Amino acid sequence: MRIRPYRHKVDQAAVLAVFDRAFPSAHPFLEGTGHFEGAREVVEQALPYWDAFVAREKTKAAGFIIVRNDGHIAALFVDAPLRNRGVGTELLKAAQNLHQKLTLQVFEENRFALRFYQSRGFQVIDGERAIDSRGTGHYRLTLTSSPP
Image (cartoon, rainbow, N blue to C red):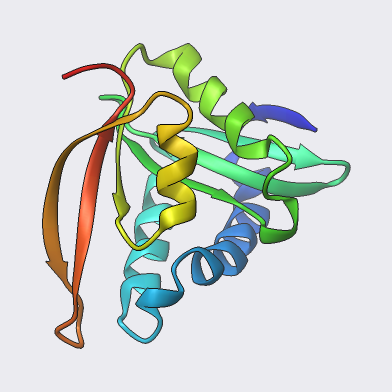
């Protein structure tokens, strides 16, 4: 596996394909709420402007991370068949090389992501209830990689 900076013209289609596969499997509790479309739009708009890295496994994209200038992780997605193989950890390391402190938000229902970040030193510092289009509440946690 190789981690490298995102190149828009070369990587856009492959990164969006990873997102299209990974988002639903990571967020089954959001199915039918419109969150997929909104999150995809954010990813599409952020890719050319914020720091982004792509993990490549042989000839295909395995995952990606997007980090805002303030160190906030806007997205980290890994193709489901390649999870638990260190892809996410390596992408996180690439972001940590750029930013001393990282923050992110994760849905409380996304237990896999919550465990992933906490096992890498992130701590929950805040939370808020987010209401989806069906009126269902989802608790969104804010985590940081260093004490607040």
